[in-house]
Picture 1: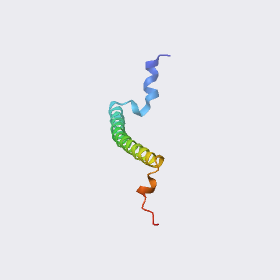
Picture 2: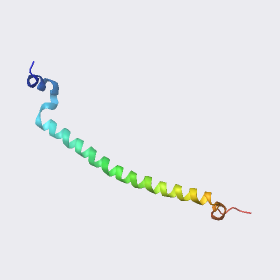
Picture 3: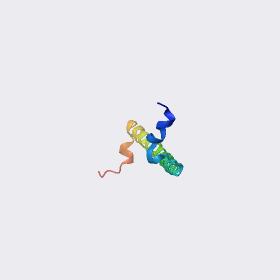
Picture 4: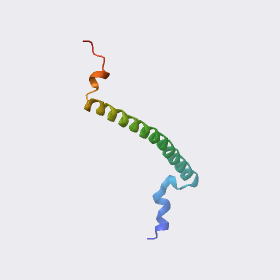
Length: 72
């Protein structure tokens, strides 16, 4: 059996050029939005990493009592 004869049957309604174009445009939009969200998420992860590392260092050198205003 020839593959080119089976191709239109396998693609079904997505075989038309306008449908393929719309599908590719939707895929491009998802990729662009995903890249923007990942860029923001990456910055938040780096900020959280710095904050947690700073708190760990402060706790490790026992300055936690100085920074916390506990009533005595």
